[in-house]
Length: 236
Ligand code: DC
Image (cartoon, rainbow, N blue to C red; front, side, top):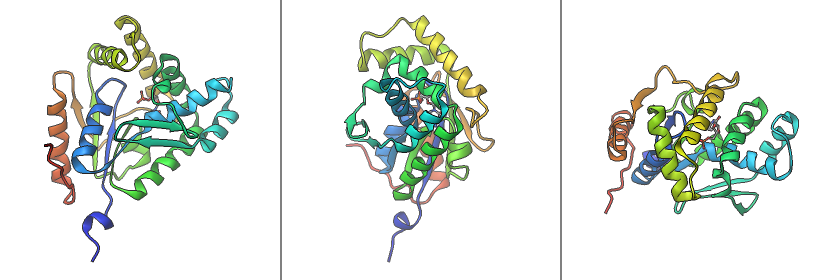
């Protein structure tokens, strides 16, 4: 007889602005629950990187839509790895120019539709923790658990500097990181296509004064309340 785990997929949707802690917490939750971790921002970043390398401008809508459809984007969890057409682009997609580019290409309807199709396809295979900007509103409006993870801009900028320091040192000054985050937030919240907005039924979590462990526990509690098949792996 098929187990519940095999017959019923679970979707945990985590949306929010950059630097709120989505990636860290989504990855930890996925490991703990035995779910797939899907970083949808990495997909927009991969399209932006490909466009930049091909010299395609951010306003060439048609070419960008074609690229989003054609891109073979691979997301691996352990260790974290993003591939674009077979090439490891894990670090290249984190560069500041690509962050801004991803925010620009993600405003294009055709790019979004192509990537949303890929995101839904990934969740057909397994239960997922998926993070992004529109997961609870557009990609999976009927997700089992929806979180809107936010934090004060200052806190988000400090976290982003730390992350850049680790991934692609040296990190730019905090003021610049803050200005870029705010510019991106404004674009992501203000666009016509699937803007960054809290779904009416999402739980708002402000991570400003919380540790990663506290955010993780709060979300895990919701997953346990709302699903019966959140298979949990104990950390050794
Ligand atoms: O999460 P991130 O910073 O890696 O995302 C990069 C950009 O991609 C972000 O500025 C907005 C866009 N994005 C989006 O529009 N929808 C998503 N589901 C994920 C990211």
